[in-house]
Each structure stands twice: as structure tokens, then as C-alpha cells.
Image (spheres, rainbow, N blue to C red):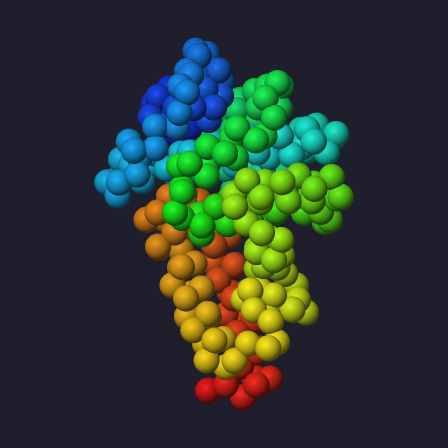
Length: 248
């Protein structure tokens, strides 16, 4: 069973707790509430802990997409269709995704508690938080453009995820950058960087963003294509810089 078929039914919510667990409980027809995210219970590397983190990622993605749609003032079924298309949700699991999406957009809470809990669940893993922000960017541009209200919302999420403005621009470029995007921005560098700094940064980014590593740390397998696209942009950016500078 894929991640989308596991997010409603109680087990995920009870394991995660906090506002993310509560929204699952409401969607499943019962109420779950905990004051904390119970970080310690999901901070180890066991298979159960990894699966719980993957569930937290998936649920947070749905909730934050719903909140983004609400913030944009255009809450329609088109957002669900975009989610299904971008993340290849099987038809049999769309009911569960729609349940959480609908509950989240009707929920009186803002997006902040959910974003804050993700930072608590993944306190040291900036790459996973980057992937979640990148996934939100994919949904935002599903209609061909990231609107001003969506961009404002995404910047607020980025700040909660502990990224500064330069890091946000890098995340934006590495996930949505076109062929003519600034390759230095994609790598988080500037044109004054030395060749050695460029090579070291590139190798570090490749290690940190390898899909297998991200999955082991909590990225759902359903996000592999997205992670591969990001890694391809990183590789392309380095190749362009290396060609311009004659880096061997």
C-alpha cells in the first residue's frame, strides 16, 4: 500500500499527535489531540519511525496545500485535481486525500501550527523541509503561474521552516527553475565563489538531495520523481557553471 492509502484511519494520527494527528482524527471521524508532536517517538531510524515521518510529510503536504488554496481565496475542486495530477495519487486513495484536504480548509486554525510541527518532527533535516516547501511550489504553479498571494504564503512557510530569503530563492530555483535560471542561484552560490567552493558545494548538494537518502529520512516514495527533477536541475546548474569556467 502506498503512502496515500495509509494517512486516514487513526494509526497515523495516534503515532504523530499534535495538530497534524488531530486533523487526521477529525477526517477519520474521531478526535485526536496532543499538546506536542511527540518528537522523540519518531526521531529514530527504525522502519516504523521512517514510515511515521513519511505519513507526517504526506499529511502536512495535503493540509498546507489546502491552507494555501484558502489563502489564495480560490477554494475549488481544481486544487484536489492538481494535487492528484502532480503527486500521482491513485484513484482508490483520492477519497482519503480529499477528506483531509476538505477538513483542513474548513479548519479555523491557520497554517502556522502545522508548519511548526513539521519543523519539530524534522528539526535537523533541512532537506526534508526543503522538499515539502518544493512540493508546495509545484502545486502553486500547477496552473502555470505562482500568484502573489501564494508566493506570500510560501515565504511565510519558508520562514517557519527556518530558511532565509536567499535560501528560499534557491529552493524556488532548484524546484521550479527553467533552463535559463541562474545556475549559481540553484546551487546557493554567487559569482564570486571559487572553483573549489563550487565543486565542494555541488558534491554536498548531490549527497544531501539523493532520493534514496531523502526516503530514508522521511520523504515518501511517491515524491521520488520530484526529488529526481530537483537533482537533475542541480546537476545541470553545475554543468553549466563548469563549462563556463572550464572546471574539470
